[in-house]
Length: 174
Image 1 (cartoon, rainbow, N blue to C red):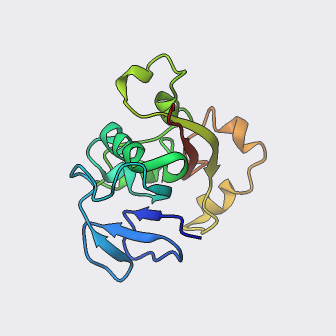
Image 2: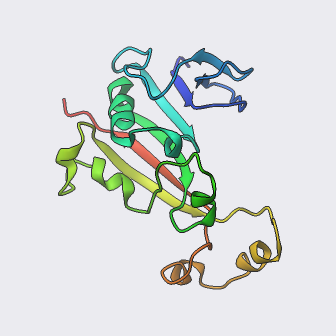
């Protein structure tokens, strides 16, 4: 198996089978590169899978980053993104967060979306999932995880979910 897999913004998180990329040299980062600087040091159509775990919200321009991810990905490549959910207080607590994500944020990168013309990248949303962390910081977090009907209550309340996960597929028209 010679799949090229990248963990963009890896920090200290080493994942077997993935090359770590970060702007700071860590034990997990084999490649040092600032993800706000373009182009990334990878050839066109060379990557099979990308993981961005809580990094995209820190970068300057989501559209440019996704266009660069598109450039380096092969047709059919999988992109997995974890990001703070816009209805979570944690999204707003961290002063280094520049962007927030909803269930529909990545639809804009689908060529069938009405506003796709803003981006030169094409991704299909394979799946998305709201995540409530199981680690209890206080009684509020504990009680939140006991709520019945969380998906319905999420329409009316904040802080039910902490994070959102997207699985995208790179679509390149041949």
